[in-house]
Image (cartoon, rainbow, N blue to C red; front, top):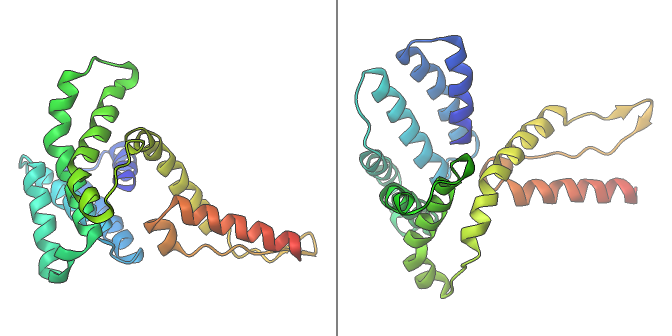
Length: 212
């Protein structure tokens, strides 16, 4: 979603036609999904985004529930065993909760600065949809997740940008004639798990540099 939003902001400035925007934006999204290993949440988001863009290009109204069902159908045709995968269940349950519950919850909340009620409603909706799965698989609840989700979304954007920056500057081996430590960040980990792995890689690289 972050990548798609960033692409659309850039392409909107170029004043491309809806069809050109759909084609140009879809290519990096598909490449990104394949590059990070085709994880269920990434493929789900990519299928929904590509179909939405193509539908808008031919002037069709998009129903998010139908898009979610299409993404699930695509994944199950490609990998039928995914139906028993916990990541599949969590990803689609959370998204379904956002689609069905967020508008209703948002209508009950007062308007907040920066439209923060949308973020609050979305966080509560996602956790409500995940509740049965969390109880069934983990036998516990995490009420703090409602608050943590509000912080995770903006931070994930920062981490994604940081990951791309590290990817670009990686590989420097000499600085002012002195040997330097190289921190190599594998993009698949950054694109899939983001925050925790990026932080771990940076910390380990710094520790090894200090030791040597």
